[in-house]
Image (tube, one colour):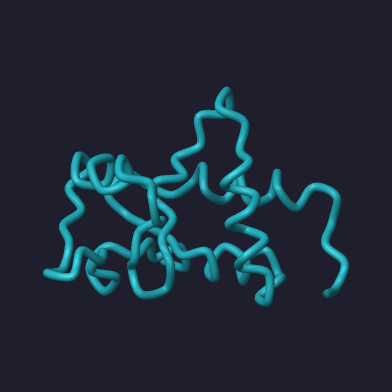
Length: 103
């Protein structure tokens, strides 16, 4: 595993804080934006450990297929409140709701 900066988690939190309401981003996209494309799992770990007082919209992060975080039943409700709809399998429609951060 390559070295990651000491502020890796803070960089993750900064990116997630910028995701607009009504959109989602993937763990992999965050890792790529940070310059660590092989560290999507570490992004997930950072989000699992986010301090509550930071008020980061972690619910807007999904996997590359649009699947929600397992065992986090509130995530779907939070996304639904922002206008995000789901496929029959319960996935986020990534073509429709993925954050186009490059625009």
